[in-house]
Amino acid sequence: MSLEGKVAIVTGSGRGLGLAYAQELARQGAAVVVNDVDESTAAEAAASITDAGGRATAVVAPVGSAETADRLVQAAVETFGRLDILVTNAGVLRDKVLWKMSDDDFDTVVNVHLRGTFTCVRAAATYMREHEIAGRIICIGSPAGQRGNFGQTNYSGVKAAIVGMVRTWSMELRKAGITANAVIPVAATAMTATMPYFAAAVEADAAGEAMPPFFRHDLGFGTADDVAGLVAYLASDAAAAVTGQAVGVGGDRLQIWSHPEPVFSAYREGGWSVSALDEAFGDIIDAHRQSVGETFPPLPEELQR
Image (cartoon, rainbow, N blue to C red; front, side, top):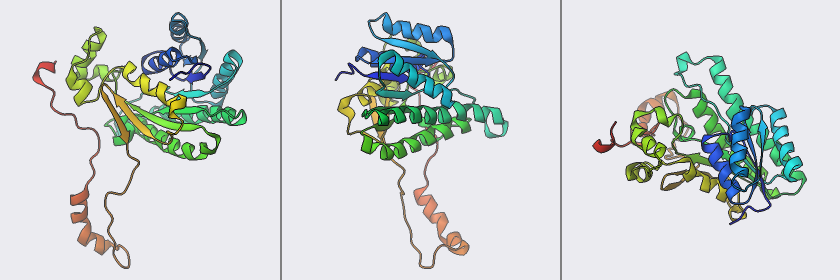
């Protein structure tokens, strides 16, 4: 697999997961437009690629507006001559429980994650279609969007919406040969670093040591580099037949997330009145109740901190 001759944009790639994606795309041969809101962070990210023999340029701008999306596409085309790959990774967190979440907390996350994904994909897909490029759209989701997470109304909502948009885009862009997929990463980040449950894994990663097998295998929890390989694969010609999928990866685990499907169907002639529901729904929901959130297994004693 090679990405030689390809050009990629990775939003929010100054550090963390986004930087790992950008660096892996460059290792596979792609020229990369990195993006961050901080000038020095963006410059350091681009330098980490060029110093390793790759090609990169930086665009300093907050993701969300159509203007930023157009700047990113313009930078790819003017600097490297084309655009083949878009990875929408930029994001922010404003975690609060529902009754404490302000309008600004909600709108900030929606603007960066949801609107930013939409505007960047629209700009990239428009360019790819106009230039008959069978491009790759890779949008970053989250387990919170698949299952919900306490204190993350805004983040869970936008990450679920991103997967919904990817499914739609896979249909709309299929004729042009452009694929659209979502990646659901499970990796050590600034957020997981604050959670005591993951302390032993984060400590090992910070020390340059392998994470304990409990985290890598049992939880499917790993490093940013563990996710980057999937992003690069989905960006390649080898993944031309893969579209509309939500693929999870973390540590030693790869997952294909299902599209929502009914788990049970019941029929009643004449429909379901209040009285009919009162009579039957309790037994139905007891037998088919769906879980919410993620439940982690007990942490082994030797990994407790």
